[in-house]
Image (cartoon, rainbow, N blue to C red):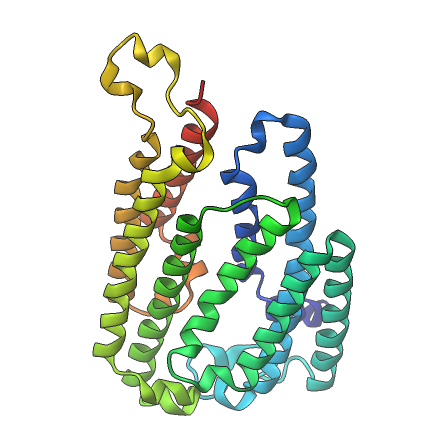
Length: 316
């Protein structure tokens, strides 16, 4: 029984749950912390939304693994998944998928009507992806990226917050960059073992050169869109991001562009991820990379700390 519960938990992909923390993006970048009562109420709303979204997303992995049993058996790592290896009966997997989907969507509806539509939109998109879209060139990558976008947008719907168009463009660019990196690493691994097409039909439509071009294109887009967001941050929010005390030191320090300090960190993070992609199999799972690579994890931490400092400590 314990082994079965462990395999069920494993199939729900707990490592993937870190993606759902992107629902907090809207809360962080709206600057609501200056109204503590509002911020804490919204914090718990988003936290509940993250939990509900995790239930919905987790249930979909059972559906995906049921559909992909044959393909997963041709993959060096995915063949060890509980459903593909027979550790979880297919009938039980169907039951968990149905119950989890219903529970998660009902929970989402109790949080917010608009959040419910975002959650069910994500659910429908993922079902379509598992059944068909994963075999359509380019669309397969865009669907992965759209999943990140929906999470960020859903977080904004929960608190009725506003997100800059530049920030949303950055989310899209980074998401496609990570998705292409995932495909690039996956193609390299499966090509070496001669099993690319057997595992996923769409892999036969990609080449290393095409994916390298996509990777370069969206790495540039991710860096530029974040840079443009930092350039326009003051005009978009109206926040004064310079403490008055700095004016006593030098007028040079009174610029309202302190969020630009995160740009070098973003560049480092992008370059590090690209390096990992060409290093081996780890980039096949972006969340595994972020959680296991110390330099990249450090970069994410520094970026987050700098953003918090600029948004909540520097303003006067």
